[in-house]
Length: 233
Image 1 (tube, rainbow, N blue to C red):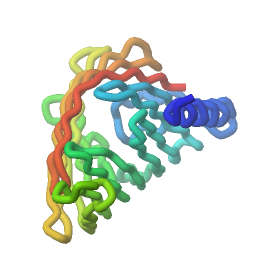
Image 2: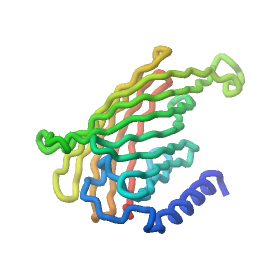
Image 3: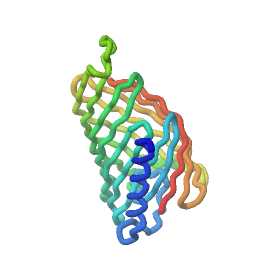
């Protein structure tokens, strides 16, 4: 059994064990859009781009949840969220691989603020400004060495980011989504990411999304185009 399958099965087992406990997981229906980053709900999903990913969250009451994402190429993300009156605060740790074999590890704390809560919905768009602080570490293989993987160059940066997520329902079942983030930090670190997609709500609890994104920062670049399925509980 591959490491990916072992991790995935362990994650799924733990997920369903917690989700099955109604005394812990949120069971009250939420009228927010399925892509709303301030939605506190228990969910499980699968995503495929260049690799497979299992992701999900478990809600502990109406304001708290934990979030986990594990990919078959050993990329991962884990964190937690707490919903305040002004918006949601997220903390996370993650690792991803960029082009050229660069491994980027990041620790972040940030927030999404729903402008609709203040009566701001220009042209029917749900807008969520985002900002936060992060610590980023990149391991870059040095191609001047014959054994490049044994002599990586490490770069660390402390900084922050600002961004905007936009959701536009175009019918009861279809939602357009787009996002952009700018980041900067110490050691001349800078970067940006953009993304866009569309979500089809097959039922109140099931959604299918097609998306694309591009990341470009000091450590490298990354293109993704994929599809995902999410089930809420």
